[in-house]
Image 1 (cartoon, helix red, strand yellow):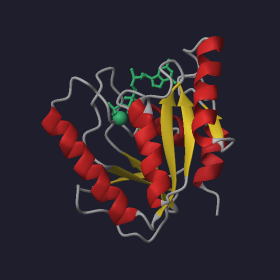
Image 2 (cartoon, helix red, strand yellow):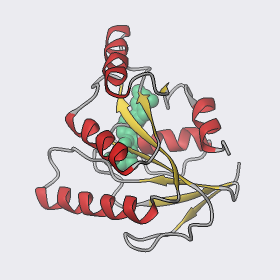
Image 3 (tube, rainbow, N blue to C red):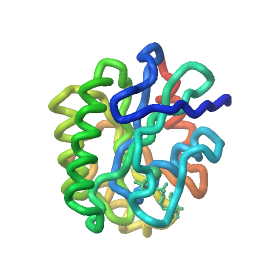
Length: 184
Ligand code: GTP
Ligand code: MG
């Protein structure tokens, strides 16, 4: 797979000539790791420190689809000002690219489960009408009990909609995510 990093800014995105899929979720949930896992490249920056990804980063896959890595939400130690900036940046991004986004992957940590901000994100996506899929991350770390609890929470929230269980560490969920990314 060919992967190219494209420079973009908060207001200036690549041309909307190819569809895009975006990975959202709480800080540290594993967005960048999952992008690396599905592309098989070390392109998105991963860190133990929450708040690693600070910009909206575009990657072009095989010249066909954009993958978008965005900063995470809900990291308590981030100053309020910074959280506000995130909110503005994301709202602007979604409103600007709404027509071009074919899928949003909403990542939820299998160990932590669904949090208030995940619910808000999903409600907002439903409200503006962008299709999304919930991806449970770090399945390798979760106990059976934690995983079933997270699954139950997601099902209560979005019904029997598609849910993908993933682990960037073990390569779990790669096929499912890739097939959604390249689906027509
Ligand atoms: P921000 O950019 O800060 O919002 O974080 P992010 O959502 O991009 O998370 P990132 O991919 O940087 O991963 C955060 C931490 O979780 C890192 O220490 C990763 O190594 C770890 N991690 C990510 N995915 C997995 C996984 O599937 N299994 C395990 N065990 N650890 C993971
Ligand atoms: Mg990141």
